[in-house]
Image 1 (cartoon, each protein chain N blue to C red):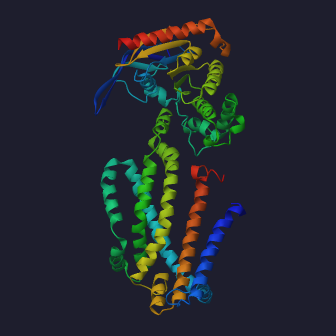
Image 2: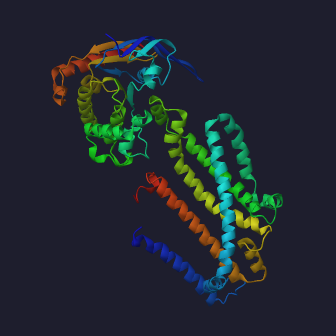
Image 3: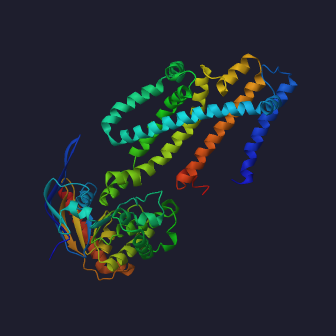
Length: 258
Length: 255
C-alpha cells in the first residue's frame, strides 16, 4: 500500500535569536489514502509545524518525508494538496468565485473549465448564491467555506487544515464539522487536520494523533472507530464520550511527562 | 451621495462666504487688506481667460512633475520592496531628500533646468511628491499578510505571480493615500517654483505681480483658479480609487 504521507524520524529545529528550538523530534507518521487524521496537542507541540513540513512550507532538519510518493516540494508544485488556515485568507479584491478559482488560474486552467469547476465547488459548500460577493460581505463561517472550496478546487488527494474552525463560534463550528464530514465522504480526500479541540478531533477523525511539546513528538495514536457516516447524533453516544475521555487522558499524561 | 448629505457642506460653504462678505461690508475693510467675495468673483469673471490660461500652464507643470515623481516613486518602491540592500540604501537617502525644505532648492532647480523651461518647475514638484509615493507604495508592497504569502507558496506561485496577484493589489490602497497627499503637493510645488522666477504667464507669477500692484481681487481670482484645479485633481484621484479598488474597506459603505 502506498502511503499518501510517509514521515520517518522527522525532526525540525528552528534557529532563532533566542537560541535553537527543537520543534519536532522523531516523528513517524504514515497516512493511508482516505484517512482523516487529526493532530491534537497543546500549543508548542509542533502540530502546525508538522503540517507545514508536509506542505513544503517548511523544510525538515532531519528524517525523511514523502507526500503522495514524491518529495514534498514536488508534491507542492504539482498541486497534490490543498490548504486551509485558521484565517480564511481570502483575497479581498476578488469575488468569492475568483477566490475559489485562484489555484486553477495559477495552474493555467482555461477560463471555461475554471468557471464550471467553481460552480460545482460553490454548490458543494452551499454558496452558489454568493459567487459575486466579496469576502468581507460574508460571515466568518461562510468565508471559511470559501477557503475550503478553494483548497479543493484542483481535486487534490490531500487536504491540509490548520485549525480551520478555530475562530468560529461553537454553533457554526459544529455545523462546519458536519459539512466537512460530508465533503470528505464525497471527495475521498485524505485530510490532515490540526486542532486544539478534543470533541472536534474525535468527531471528525478516523485517527487522532496526540502530540506533546518540548520537543514536539507523537505520544499516542488513537483509532476512532465511530460508525460512518457521522452525524450530530454521534456526539451524544456513549462511545463518543469514551473516546473523548481517552484522548483527554492521553493529552494529560503526555503533558505531565514533559 | 444623497441630497441630504449635501446640505451641511453647502451650508458651511455659503455661511463662510456670506460671513466674509458681511464682515468686509460692515467694517468697510479696504480691498488691499481683504477684498469681498463679490469683488473677487467680479475679478474672476473679468479676467476669466487670463487666469484660466495661466492656470492651465501651472497645471501642466504640476501634472508633469506629479507624473515624474510618481513613476520614480513607484519604481523605486518596487525595487525597495524586492531587494533589502536597496531598501537599506534608498530609505535613509529618500528620507533625507524629503526632510530638505523644497523652498530652499527651488532657485537652484530653476537655474539647473532653465528658468524659462517648465521642466524646472516640474523638477521641484517631482522632488516633493516622490517621497510620499515611494514610502507608501513600498509599505503596501511589503506589508502583506503572511498567511497570504503562505497560501501563494502552497499553490507554487512564482515571485512574479505573487507580485501581480497579491502585492500590487495590496499596495493599491497605500498608493491612493499617497496620491491624495501628492496631488495638492504638486500644485503647491508648481506655484512655489513659479514664485522664484520664470515665465510671467503662470499663476504664481501672476499672483505676485497683481499683489505688488495692490490688485488683490485679481490675485484672489488666481488663487480661486488654483483651488478649483486642486479640487478637480483630487476628485479625479477619488474617482480612480473607486474605479480601481471598489472592494476596499474605505469605500464599502457607499458600495
